Image 1 (cartoon, helix red, strand yellow):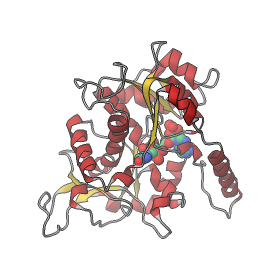
Image 2 (cartoon, rainbow, N blue to C red):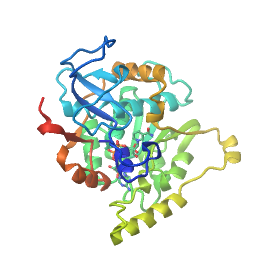
Image 3 (spheres, rainbow, N blue to C red):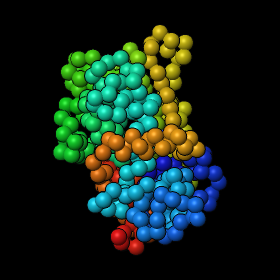
Image 4 (tube, rainbow, N blue to C red):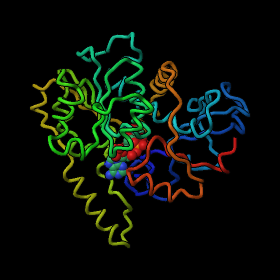
Length: 333
Ligand SMILES: NC(=O)c1ccc[n+]([C@@H]2O[C@H](COP(=O)([O-])OP(=O)(O)OC[C@H]3O[C@@H](n4cnc5c(N)ncnc54)[C@H](OP(=O)(O)O)[C@@H]3O)[C@@H](O)[C@H]2O)c1
């Protein structure tokens, strides 16, 4: 599951088109049959597949270039937890963020040699991939998360010291995010080179202010706009959430472009599914992600395919850690 699936089923994902729509951007399983001109995969291969929508299914037809081998000794659940989010993290950090793909390589454009990166929702699916990538390139990663349990996870799994993790609404409640990142997480030594923001809302301004000269602010999500709970108009809570959604939308951050000239900072946004038609980019992304040899992803929780509704509600609660996976037939391998 990807967070975008929640937006899809709520009818908030434009590109999904009108209902009925089958959500899902990635899946993992065994090749059942291949097209006559397919050369890179064979029947019986254990593979990961990416597709724009439709992956909440038992059988999928996936284009050859979007099928990748599942790494030896990775489970199906791990395979289904990796590619879309690793590719997203790579695009944010290494393409838009101009970070290198290895510790030895020079930063492509960023001025600071420290490679300081702020990752919001760092204990989530994409967040953990970003954290691993920044560690891989020898950078300094500063994280925000929604609760203390996630800060603990980042320490135990990735070795991120507690002072580099900001529990939003708690650690920054008194002094604000900008001050806490500058003084506590970065210990007063410089600012950030890249911010990867999937939450947006009130995080934007402090993150932008924290950027060094030449720094890059990458917007990839608007999770803060998502009301925690459903949008069912037949329930009072649904109406409340709809109003919250509208207010969050109206309060979304904006940037004065005239002012930005003097700031020497870049702000960019992207949607990976819109990049799937750029085959050279996709191939480069897959290759560079492979080269990084990232650790196996964290499968935070698995749900039976039949319990998809419960899984969606849990995802929208904002409490998930790592990746949520839907398993067909009990996840048989
Ligand atoms: N642009 C793209 O192409 C692209 C591709 C993939 C993913 N994304 C975006 O990247 C983000 C991460 O995706 P993911 O699939 O890996 O999900 P995820 O991070 O595993 O889960 C979503 C997380 O968002 C945070 N969050 C903040 N406000 C929330 C709210 N109001 N309701 C629910 N959750 C909230 C929660 O973490 P904390 O409370 O700990 O912050 C939650 O755990 C999402 O915003 C997604 O839309 C964008």
